[in-house]
Length: 145
Image (cartoon, rainbow, N blue to C red; front, side, top):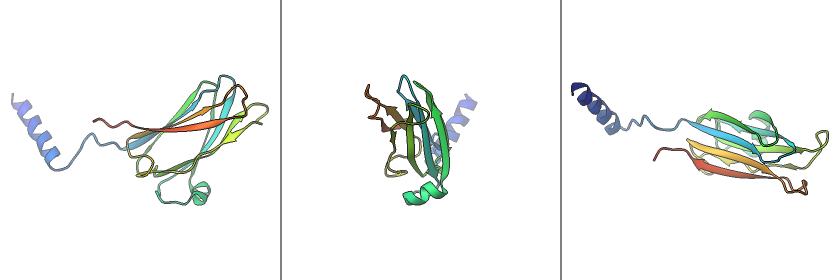
């Protein structure tokens, strides 16, 4: 009984002082290739400055490159401080010797498009015509209610 009382007291003290032990501290990014036949070569840039202009983000931001196999996914996680802005600068559907359609996104920014603790998912798809390659961006909150 004494340990339970001490634990309850510590939790009460932490919560009343504004300390939230369950606060999110990272952003998860998932790249999904829904193609059944072709690889996707995706280049993203991230930065720790929320208001960085897009042209600067692609010049000085951290460059991340992923080749995602058909039906595959790639995931990375960054701290909320390190991922304040993200852009899918170029994604290519690798149809024939690296030749194929491409797509990109606008810059996503912390506070406007996502928050700390969110999951950002980029899903690449195309129809049977293949040349209508597209990316859908979905942002979901992973916070515990």
